[in-house]
Amino acid sequence: MNKIIELVIERFYHLGDIPLCNGISSRAPHFFGYCFPLCYRCTFFLLLFLITLIVCYRKQKKLSFILCFLCLIPMIIDGSLQTFLGINSTNLRRALTGAMFGFGLGSLIVRLYMIIDVRE
Image (cartoon, rainbow, N blue to C red; front, side, top):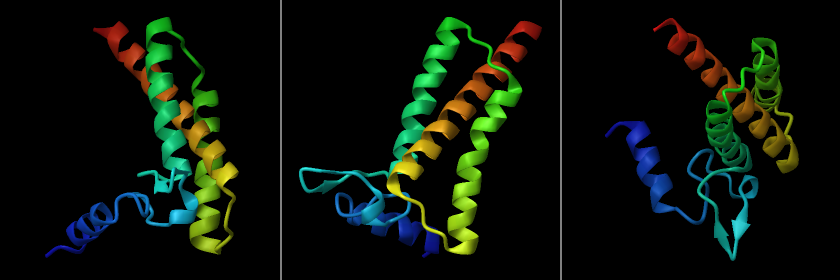
């Protein structure tokens, strides 16, 4: 069987014990002894991404491309430091960088959609 499929099956088998994304229990919020299915970074990324998509699209907010890309950089740097240099970040930093990335990516997608929508 493919290793990716085996990993996915294993993560779902341990649902509630470890997060699905990185499999490290200490990097995920816990509620009533239950480990949340996503780590802090992924949780806040997804939360702010969805909120930003909804709010920016409904309000027709056009944020600058520079601001969108600047919001992406902290998570890229933090993730790279952890992956390549072994420098661990705190859960607070993971949450903040995930939230900034979610906001930046969400607003970038809305901005691009508005550009495409105007042309049609």
